[in-house]
Amino acid sequence: MLDKILILSASSGAGHVRAAQALERAVVELNAAREVRHIDTLLYTNKMFRNLYSKLYLDTVNSAPGLFGWLYDHFDEPWRDERQRLVFDKLNTGPFVKMLDRYQPDVIICTHFLPAEIVSWLKGERRLAAHHAIVVTDLDVHAMWLCHHYEHYFVALNETCVHLEKLGVPSNKVDVSGIPIDPVFAQKKDQRAMREKHGLEPDRFTILVSAGGFGVGPVQNLIRSLSQLRHAAQVVAICGRNTDLKNQVEEVAAGLPSDHPIAIKAVGYTTEMDEYMTASNLIVGKPGGLTTSEALAKGLIFVVVAPIPGQEERNSDHLLEEGVAIRCNNLPTLADKVDRLLDDQVRFKVMQAKTQLLARPCAAYNIINTLSRING
Image (tube, rainbow, N blue to C red):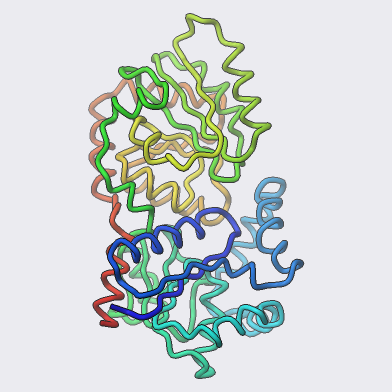
């Protein structure tokens, strides 16, 4: 058993934090360390820097996604601007560095590139001796994840592993683990029982619409489009913490006739996403790394709509290439695309089967077991 494991995330988007929480739970359940702590790195930075990473991220994604995509591609050049970025990060993460100097864990696991970069620098300065593991939380890997001082990378796909090897990461320092998701997604639950528990029709085809933990994306327009489906279905819209969005979806639902073939249910922030996914047959939304991994674990075909330029575009490419997704670029055609998929049940079942080839519901356990074996 290890003495101390420190898991570091950053709350710029919900996925990095959820991956860290999944790893923390796996450490506890596997009894892998005497002490485990999960820390949001941004809590140890100044307010301006914190806003840059969290609020600015969301604002840019929502109001200027094209700009975000350009920035993503612009900075995806290995080692370019590395020194300038490190100087900027060091100036704004003083309390974080002091915390690491004091804590001195045995293993540090980073689910975001910001703490990974600082930990790498401290290891280079010989101020940290911890085993440094980096968990990439998208299907693809961006240049910002590259570090000089580390012991291990964990990635989602074989292609991502090859990419890192081509960039100079030794093959024995990369594991294709999958993206860590809450271990609850590995539990088998009955679809009918989950539908009944959450007030859904037990025998009706169910479509999950996910806006993510922050409730962003064109969800209201998605619901209007899905209300035009020929096939009878129930649509569950997960609106996150966005209460205005939830109210808007409920207004759309209230405007449908009582005999309409589409039923709509709006759900706010929930910690039972695994149960809603179990209840569903199809997921419509944005392919973030964590949402994608959770959906695959539950055997859901993905209908990609409005991916964020950059990482979600690349996630979308991988899903389409693997045959587990379709993509809708124009919302007025969404219902038609889904109807045509449902018309072809052979294709639908083949796509469902392919999700299981990609799914890695035990990724969190596997990462912790690997680190325990290496450091045991």
